Length: 333
Image (cartoon, rainbow, N blue to C red):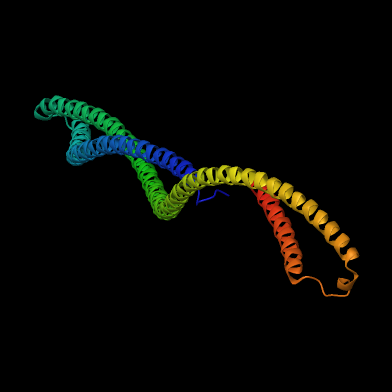
């Protein structure tokens, strides 16, 4: 799972979602183009079917009118033919009657009328044949028109079925279009929500980064101040070390002088000790010469001299130890 707090991962995720949205948008635009093309074709086909249907209906109506007219004419002709047939039958009966009468009693007048009846009979038969031929032609034309009407009705039913199928296809396309639109809207909404979340996370990360940068800047400033103070301290220390070095060199010179003085004092003390020993020997010899003074207390002045000598030696030893300690400390520094 991606780390949504990582700006790089957020950028990659946003780029992937943008590519996905572009792909869905392209599919949606392609689907819209295809839908518009299908709608155009459907409308064109529907218009063609409607025009064909109107033409078929018009032609059907015309054929029905013509069929009705021909039927009426045929009925009228049939009626006329029936009347003519009846009239012909009557004429035939009259002719038969006249023939019978002519056989029984020939009369010139009736013999003249007989050829006229034959002519009427032939004329009626001829007209009857013509009417029958016309009736057959009308029947054929009527059947042809009926077949044509049935064919047109079949074509119209087929076109109507195709139109219904096209309408169903259009409904399916509209349904797919709505689903794809909802999918695109959902993808866009999800991307918008993720983009807002990513913007919020980016803003928080930016704030955290800014805080971290400010802390680092503060730390840098603190370090710079510490560095400056350290530089000042180093400069002060260098200055102090220079002064200490000067003091050390000065102290060394003093120590050297003191050592020289100590050596002189030691030599002087040694000389004084030799002198004192010599004096003591002389005094001892004097005491030996004057026994009365053997039991006298020591001379107070000599005690002071001996005390001063011890104190002087003690002070000299302490001074030497202090000088040695100071020399060791300076060497360690």
